[in-house]
Image 1 (cartoon, rainbow, N blue to C red):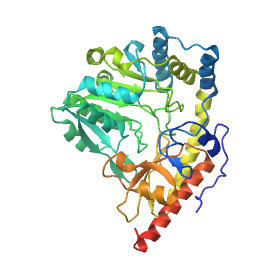
Image 2 (image 1 turned 90 degrees about the vertical axis):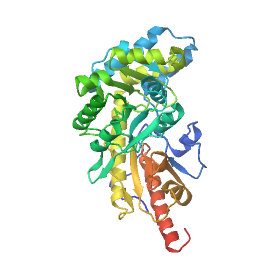
Image 3 (image 1 turned 30 degrees about the horizontal axis):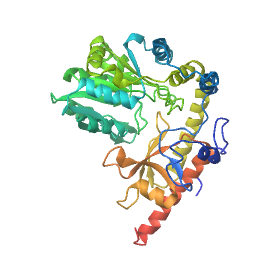
Image 4 (image 1 turned 120 degrees about the vertical axis):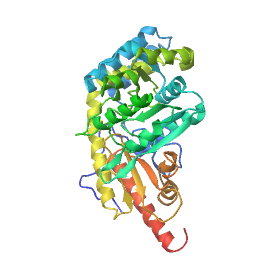
Length: 405
């Protein structure tokens, strides 16, 4: 069954065909068999911005792969400061910025810097799997605070969060805002309440805001550190251009420290050389994206918004078999599949539909009936993905009815 959509499946100029995607080297298209359509890992099926491509080619054409001066790191930090001011009205000091390879590295380093082995770390769940993996690998204890699925979308259970942060050995709260996988954009009121709880219990807030530029109107991203003077001084913010500009393998991330005390503690615990050095190619790509990539990003956001609407229309046509809220940000739909088997939903879709979505149980153990759909692709590929999910659900229902599930 084809999804019920009102617009024709027209490939955008920056879109790639299935043949082109399979001919490239990305993990997304080379993890499963060729008859499987992938919609799992967070890559977009789009060509990069011309400015980014030219910045990388300029270095390659010059054959200049030499060591880069420290001034390039300062340029990257200054460009971050300019971008945050322009996009979010957030004034930051580039001297309080550390440049590193990626934000999972940043999560690991900040957890090590602001907590001790055995400490509890608060996390709103379901959550991007590396959050939990970081805690496991560093010997910290996950303090999960499940978000509440309401008719209007997922919300933060502030009473549960207050209880979670109350013990003295809970020292850090990891936020993901905009939230992955639910697509929620936390409001100023929610962030202010979270800030108040963190301040009351002496908890450092580490806020991963990598999806900040992938927000759909009328929602607006609010930087956690801007909600109060208290938040400004006790928040560590993680940021990167890699998600919005599809630069997953050009690793370049940023950690901003809200106070000198936080900065000094990080530097005291984390050896500088442990972070390595970001490549000059990655910095050049990031700077080009932020300085010259806005036209491309605007086109991509329009396509993502149309794709989001396409998924929403498809969900509405599924006669209750699929539950989802339209995401306020990101290019993910967090879908609950109402089928009668205890088998993980992602396994059903892979077997019966030959379509690979991200398994929900990787985001929270209780979410095996959920999947995360990456809709950052062309309309025609998205239509095929949704049709395969529909087919898989229909096939599975027939199988259950026949007693063969």
